[in-house]
Image (cartoon, rainbow, N blue to C red; front, side, top):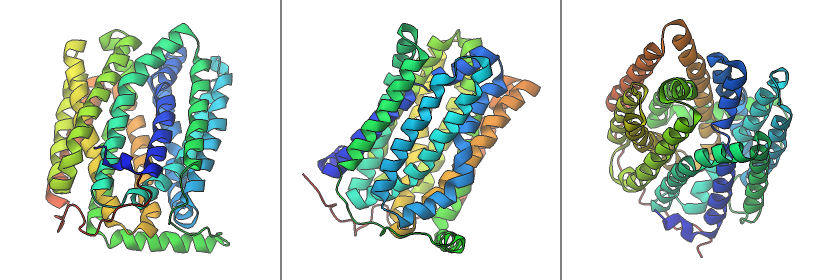
Length: 411
């Protein structure tokens, strides 16, 4: 799993991503808990996810065009600096009357992420190649996600208790600045030449070309709706996690333990996916991991104690990480790099739409019917997506490309 760290530029990219991710995850419980404490509303809490994913829905395809035309390294640096400024708006959300600033800040921060994520995903294959280095990089990122999920939530809760919400905001701002610095230290590797988009027509021409590439790749055509379905179900339950923990498990401290359990699962899943993604067809790996995630969801939200909730959280982390890494790696290996930014942006837009739908649908079903109803719907949708993937995802001729070459900058 550490193979990609032999490459200097990837070490810098990974270090910057880790720092900024840590800063963001310190707030993952603090923000929705803050909103729920002030308003007591499930819907208002769910709207924090809506605010986070709305820019991806509106701007995702255009961001893909830009990242396939512009220097992706500069795009990532600019996005980090913009996000650092955006997060400072939360410093002024100190009462219910100013709570809207949190939503504005989340929208602005997410706008920067809309540019950053496709640029980063398209740049990584250039840095590490498309063979074992790529699966190493993706599994290491998943391992990092797990570590951050394990450490950051309880650490954020401790910082919040000992200091203030504003302290966490300043830490997040600093994390984006550090990330920008690390990316600025990377080499200027091959990628799209910096080009200006002189007309709106040119944007739509590039979008149409990207759609043509996507339609010509059967695996991308199938993975797009399947990924969206999984993320919608996941978002509906994520929007209910904080209220569920407060009402059923006893409070925000217990929620921190559950999120940490998810992190442990991500660690374990990252170690497993490093080899599985190179040896098992995406069809089988995706279906098995998604079905197991559905079962774990059901167990978690049916629990009333940490004794049951924590193992379920670990299982969600293990199989959820596999469900996310599998399609990402398949796309990076099968989509031509000159179109990878646009294809990635299409998937991120689908993710944003799915998350918006899920973040609204989960709390709405819980309010109108019951929490149990919302959970059952999400579990059935997740399991149905797993079975559909087993039937529809095409088999690939090979899992790891033979043409994968060592990436430059090995040190």
